[in-house]
Length: 112
Image 1: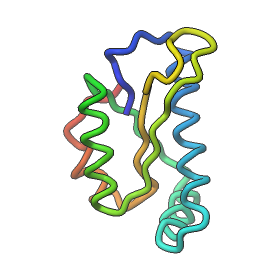
Image 2 (image 1 turned 90 degrees about the vertical axis):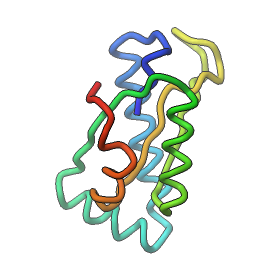
Image 3 (image 1 turned 90 degrees about the horizontal axis):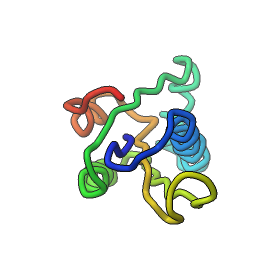
Image 4 (image 1 turned 120 degrees about the horizontal axis):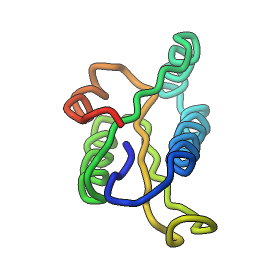
């Protein structure tokens, strides 16, 4: 989920989303249930869906719902070396996990 209320160039958005994807993989490696989901995701070709949220509050709310459902989550806060202020939360990731669980949290969001 990418915040559209933070002005970022296309390359910056791509980098932030990549940070989230890599971080989620690293988070998932050592938890048994998450590792099973990770292995399935890797075998499926590592699908990723990038959606947009309108605010930090919306991003945090959806991350909290994902955590309540025991899904892997990660919030990316930028280092502030290029386009935005240090510590700005730019995006959040959910998964890998079962599509039906993730869709309950993000299925209503529009694609970026």
